[in-house]
Image: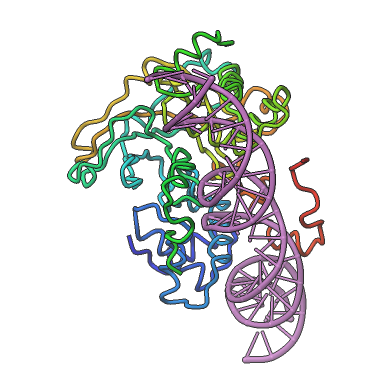
Length: 185
Length: 185
DNA sequence: GTGCTATATAGGAACCATTCCTAAGAAGGA
DNA sequence: TCCTTCTTAGGAATGGTTCCTATATAGCAC
C-alpha cells in the first residue's frame, strides 16, 4: 500500500519523530511491500531516489521506527534482520527453501491462549505463530527437503547460506574460498 | 537431564557422527539445561573440563548436531544464536526483560492448523508458537515495559543491547565508547 | 521569513559473532 | 595395526551492524 504523505506525516508526528526525505522513503518502501526486506534491500531501493543515503541512515532509521512501534523486526535465521511495516497482529509462513516470509492473518490464531499454570508466573503480552514449510514456488521447483531438523539451517554472516558442515569438506575439495560471495557492491 | 554415555553414543551412531570427548561434552552441556545457551555460553562451560577447546569447535559441533537433527537453533533477537537439545515439538515463552527463553509444551498448541486456502499453496511442515512477555523474575523486579513495539528491540552485535536510538545521544553525552563491553576474555 | 536548537545524516572506523583456512590429531573400520 | 576420513585448534577473515564525529536540516519560537 502506497501511503499518502499526510498519513505518514501524522504517524511520525504522533510519535514525536522528525520527518525527513530519507526517513519517508525508507518507511514508504517498507510499507509498500510484504516481502520482509533486509536493511540492505531497503538501502538498495531507497538509493535509487537518494543516491547519497548511507546504510547507517537506514539502520538508524529502522531502529527509530522500531522503537516508535511503526515497524517490526524479525530474525528467523541468524544472517540478517528483516523488517515489516505491518504492525497489526499477524503470523508468518516461513519458507525453508528460499527463506521467504509471507504474512498470515487468522483470527483463530490471534486468539490463542494458554493456562496460567502452564506459564508459571510468566506474564504474556503477545504471541505469534510461525509455520515452516515450502512456498508454492519452491514446491514447484522441487526445493523440498526431507531431512530432519531442517529449520534454522546454516545461516551465518560470512557464509551466504552454507552450513557449518561444509566447513572442512570445502577445504578438502579445494573449492574457491572467499571469492564467490553474495555481495555485488 | 544427564544423558547416559551409551544413550548419547547411540544417538551419534544412528546419525553417522563420530563421538569425541569435546562433542560429548558440548551435547551433554546442552542436554543438561533448558536455558537455551549461546555458543559462547557452551564454550565457557565446556572449557572447564576441556581447557583447550576452541570456540571454532563449539560452532562446528553445534552445526553438525543441528544438521543431524539433534539440536535446534533459535534466533529471537539478532544478537546471537541460542541452542536447545529439546527436539520434541514445543513452544517458547520469551522474556522481553531479561531475554530468557522458557520451553512450553501444550498439546493444543501442537495441533494448530490453518485452512489450505489461507496458505495459498504453501506446504506446511511444522509450526511453533512464541509467547512474548515478562518472566516471573522480571515481573518481581519491575522490568515490565509498557511502550509499543517492545519485541525485537535493540539487539545487534557491538551494542550489548543498546538501541540504535541511543546512537547520537550517547555521543552528545560524551559517554565512554567501546570501553565497557560485555566480553571479559 | 529568520534564528535557534535538537535531532538526523553521511562517512569512515570499529566491533564481534561466526565462518574460513590449514595442518595436525583422533575415531572407527578393515 | 594401519588407513582413511572426520575433528580439532588456532589464526585470519568476513560482513552485518554499531560507534564516532562533523555537518546539515527539521521544526519550533519569534
